[in-house]
Image (cartoon, rainbow over all chains, first blue to last red; front, top):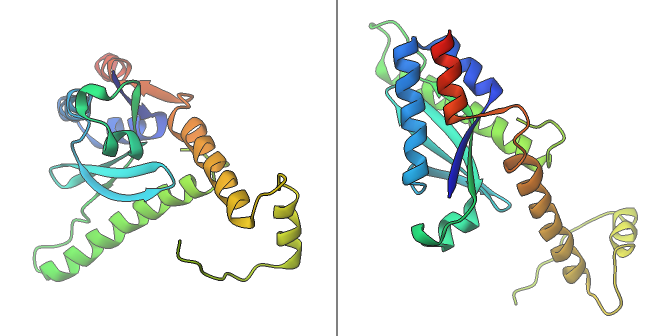
Length: 130
Length: 65
């Protein structure tokens, strides 16, 4: 069984940022991982934990899970897998007359900051927590 | 097994040595400590459900807003 959970902090970010309808759509998207745990793009491993992301429009939602279970077990063999959504990042919206190159760079910078934050928590072995 | 050299202080080396079981090499000790750290990482960061919500709880909370 795959269990998807969301940190309190991320829940607050979603509830604050999106309308109720859109927030429900995001929750629906996160729930799809229960049926399809391999979904999402792999970012990196820190120890046994893999950081992955799924996209929703201009937003990215980052989750962590047991990378070894996910990588080496077949879908039907996966038992008691926890998928924990921890952070989100967004595209920085700039004025139309600003070059798309600048927009891309800002977006990348924002994403990298979020990923680095997740890595720091994982490397600190729980001293800070999510 | 390919080998490499890393520089650590004598103090750190001595502390690693405190974890040595009979017949273990530094590689054995560090591998054992690393495995333990990885397990702790899984338990404390992934499986700890403190301050988290399930999908059902998140949905219910959103719809109460």
